[in-house]
Image (cartoon, rainbow, N blue to C red; front, side):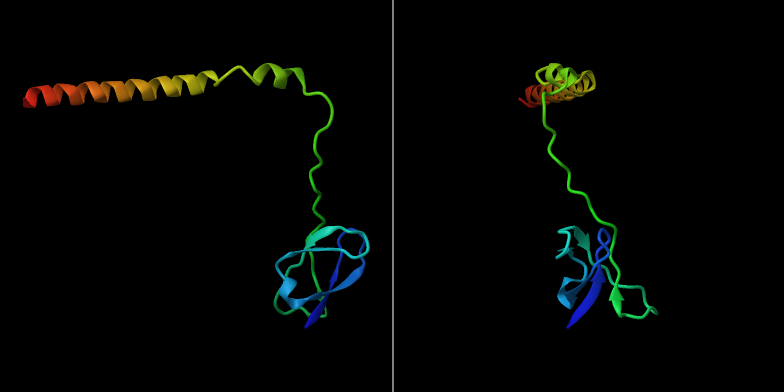
Length: 106
């Protein structure tokens, strides 16, 4: 069974199969990608509603900014280094405690 939906970009009506409700469809007229939703209960089901058009992110072209280029090989941030230092010290102190306990058992 097909239902009518309206493209949020070009406002053209299109017929979609019932199985496409809850999925993204492409408008046959303007190639806009939009989501087909179920109309609220109590409303007449002659036309299906749709969410606003979604924009597809475009890749960034051109040279990278100097901040990105400088930070690319800088290593972990100071908070990350501190966290790593705390984790390593906890592991070493736990290992030291375990060795002391093993030494006492012998």
